[in-house]
Length: 201
Image 1 (cartoon, rainbow, N blue to C red):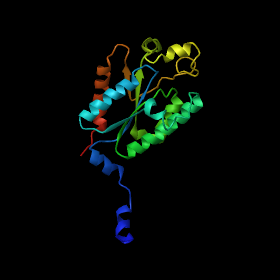
Image 2 (cartoon, rainbow, N blue to C red):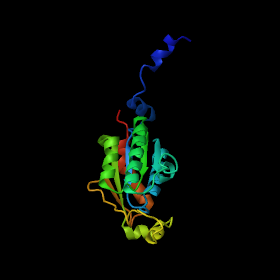
Image 3 (cartoon, helix red, strand yellow):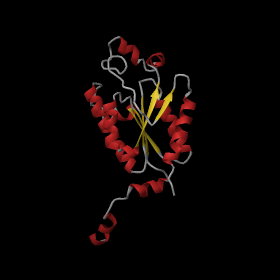
Image 4 (cartoon, rainbow, N blue to C red):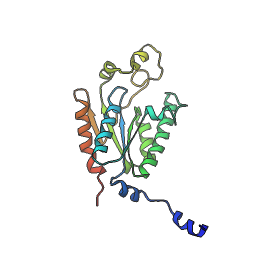
C-alpha cells in the first residue's frame, strides 16, 4: 500500500465528541477529596461498579495506581503533593479527552492544590466532591494504621495531624459520611452525577 493511501486516514485524530458518542457518555473528572479514612476510595469503587453496571465506562485513579507508578518518586510534603496532583490532573485530562469518566480519589488537601487540578482539567470537566468526615471518625477507622503512626511521629507531613487539610468552600457535591453508609453515599453521588454523565442526543 502506498503512502498516498495511508496518509488520509491519519489527517486528524478522533475528537472527544466522537469517543463520547462511541461510549455513549459525557466524560467528566469526578474528584473526591477528603481526609485519609473518610471513605473516598471505597465510595469511588462503589460508584465505579454502579456506573459500569448501568452502561457507563469509568476509570478509577487513586493512590494505589498512581503512587506505585507515575508518582512513585514523590513524598508527602506540600511541594510533592502539588506535583502529585499536577501529574494526576494531566492524566485525568487525557482520560477525559478519550471520553472516559475519571473517578479520582485523593486527599488533595489544600484549596490551591485542588484549584491547580481544576485549572488543568477545565472547569467544565471537573466535578469536586467533598467526602466530609470528621478527623476523629477517620482516626477511629484508621484501617491502615496511618493515623497511629502519624501520632507517634513515624509518618511526617500527614494530613490532619501535622499537615493541613482545607475544606472545599463550594464543592459541587458534599457527602457527610459520619452517620451514612457507603451504600447510601454511593447512591446519592450516583444520582447526582447521572444527569451530568448522560449523553444528550
